[in-house]
Image (cartoon, rainbow over all chains, first blue to last red; front, side):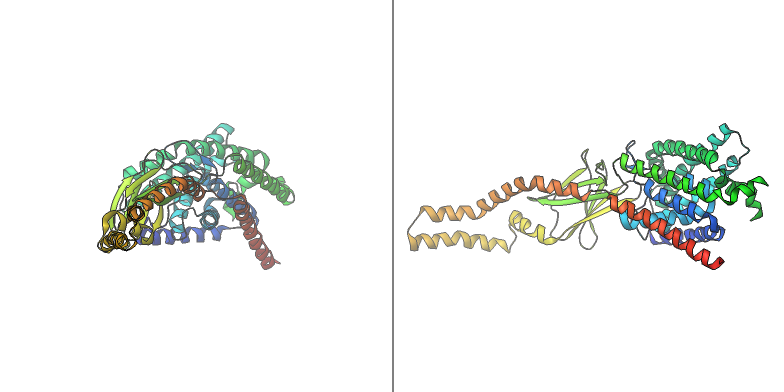
Length: 209
Length: 222
């Protein structure tokens, strides 16, 4: 998912950086004093997840966890993923500094989209089965959308869209399944152990703030 | 409501419980699976008149059937090929220039390796017998002749005249053979994944940033 330096054209890089800046601004505006620890922890989880390699499929793929971040953080996934990617670029040389904007957008935008698509399932009133299914779908779909976005970024630089997107998505099918299961497991764990965290995002507090 | 009351105190403790859980989970995942990563790398070396390249994802999985493109110093494309099952691709030295070898794996991955002209030039001189070297060779052949006249010792000069090129080829060949394992080892070293200290350092940075943000926010409030 990390696009290397020197692959994309300057226009795509600038557009990606601009959109990411907007997303981070929205995320920081929503950031509440009490939520900073969870943003930090999930950012750290995102940072480490990229080291968990899934050795299935044609290429090298790894966990991303953007579905989980979107589910718990909503728009705050933007700053969390940005920080994770900065450190991955500096310490692991994944992606690069110039592609930071595009890479953040490719991973954080699906997180926010899935937050709106599947967040309704996270309300505490929902039945456990529905809750699990929406959490799974959230984890899997965010990877799918990320793959399509990576394909789209490459397309804007001149590669054919369908082959590029197909390749990225095909490489990430195992990751999609694993992330779906992981996201569902984490969401269920939170629902049981710390419902306030989900409530903070989806409960009545949202309307008051 | 009761929920509001409950929120006050245990929220912080609960948060730490989750923190511990996530840390433990990521720790386990991190050290259970080999620390593999998402990056491509290419390593190239000269052997005889051929340039060998080895391409892989960091962590060691070879990049199979990936595009390798060779450029000269000015960025003109010289040749292009695909890696084999072992992620290797070899080609003859195409031109006397700094070679920039780019690996273009799928999904926006790109890696580069440069071979400076100094590594290629002597081989080209030898193989093509370029005009600069031509005269040198003839003088070498001429030298023994004059030597034979003066020293009047036929066998040794003949051996010297032959050996100049042959010995070099022999030495090169045996050196290539002896150094092959070391070159392979270097190629493997290039692909080392992130170390534990880098991983922990990154996590520390993130927690530190969260802490600093919290500190300033709490000061602003208080």
